[in-house]
Image (cartoon, rainbow, N blue to C red; front, side):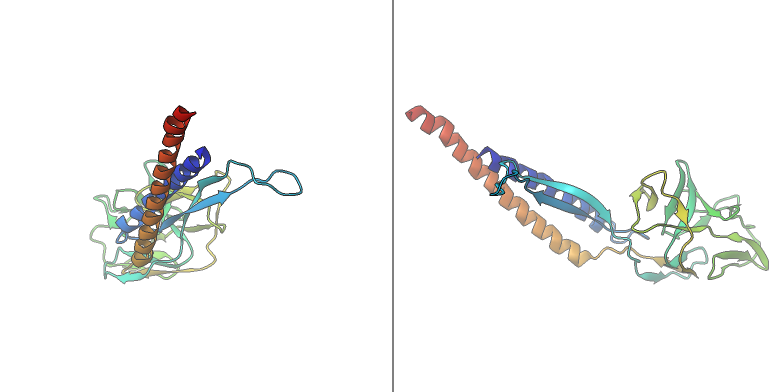
Length: 245
C-alpha cells in the first residue's frame, strides 16, 4: 500500500516535469532557431539474486534525462540582408556577457559601432575576431561558405563550429547553447551552406506536442486517482480496521 502511494507520487512528479518540457516547446513554437526538448521517463525494478528473480518491493519511476531535438527547423524567407540561415550542421559563435555561446538563430543586426550583433546585443564572431561594417559602406553580402563582404571589401568569415554527435550541450537562454562538459571541444562542421535573407524556424511540432500534453495529463490524472484510492484504503486500515482489532 505504501509502495503504491510512492509509485503514484513518483509518476506524477515525472509527468509534471514532462508537462513543463512540452509547455516550453509550445511557448517557443515561433522562436527563431529554437530546438524542442523532451523527457525520458524511466521505470524499472531491481531483482533479488535468486532463482525466482523476485522483484524488490521498491520499484522506481523517475525522470531520467532531458534531451534536445537538434533536427533542422524549416527555412523562412525574410529578405533581410542581416538574417542568416545555416543549411546543414553547425552553430554561429557569439560572444555574450557570460562568455562564448553557440546558436542557430541568425537574426542579426548592427549596433551603433557597426558590429554584427544578436538580438540581445552580443557580438557575432568571425574566425579572426568580430564582424564590423561601415554604417554607410554599401550592400552587405554573405557567401555560401560564410565569407562576409560589404561592397567589394571582405570584412571576415562567420565562425561556424560544430560538436561531436550526439551533442552534449546545455541551453543557456536566448536560443544559446554551451558545452555540457569542459572537455567537449568544438570541431569543424562536416558541411553547411549559409543562406542570406533567411532564418531557421523552430523545429517544434505543435500537433505532436499537443497530443503528448493530453496524454501526459491523462496519465497524471490516473496516477492522482490511484494515489487518492491508496490514501483512502490506508486511512480505513489505520482508523477502522485497527480500531476493530
